[in-house]
Image 1 (cartoon, rainbow, N blue to C red):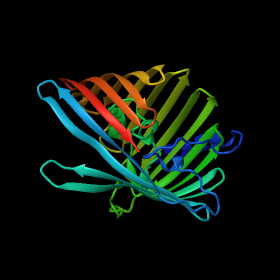
Image 2: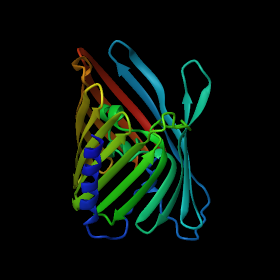
Image 3: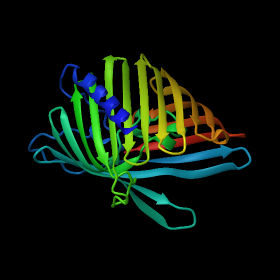
Image 4: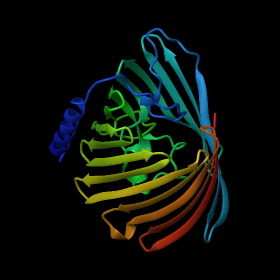
Length: 326
């Protein structure tokens, strides 16, 4: 299985490398973006630390439970540039576990070196697997990521990653990580997690991509994605599967559609399906919602209706969330 994964990814790298080269594409400013979204510093630039972050206040109604108020997320980030084309980033989350005092949890802590269309990142950050996980949660169109992304995508980890961009046409990321998850400073089994992702833009409105994540002695995961955007309309879909050495195969998908009715109002709908080896744990859901951008990229009011069926159990949830970015 490892040999097939390596061969598959090498072929993907070769196809991307044949695309015309150019300047790296601009990335949107985002307080919880991936390392690729950090602006490339000039060779001798030194910038003062830039503080950012966001908070999400949420009201959730669930049948049989009633109304619950939560502080869904509260995060603060610090970004800056250093001489010799280096930059850095820290991101922490403030958490309040039920019945305990508040905690601070590290999310990102990385150093990045950039030279033209190439970059090298080291530290703790998001592994480059699946479009929806790489996106900041502040930019995801629904209150939560799809179940297949939460269940199967490798999350933040400690490691090193190389990147290359061919203008707006294509990009390639390849990283080696401990495979232990975030905030685990040791590699307990001495094996590694290798993650690679390649994306291409055949034309301006369409981006396609594929990714592979291989654990040395556990499983191999594959992801395929496509995003189409045109005049306020959005279509995005991903298929993810995990082929275990022992214990069967997990697989699933989601498809999301959005339409920006006016610049400050977007309608969204998503259908998703996660199929683990045990049929009794199959997870299917439909989400319908509306996003009100009260201040573009700063203040968003979100309302979602979610009907989810896990095995034979069905539940219905209403979510209203106010998101503030600074």
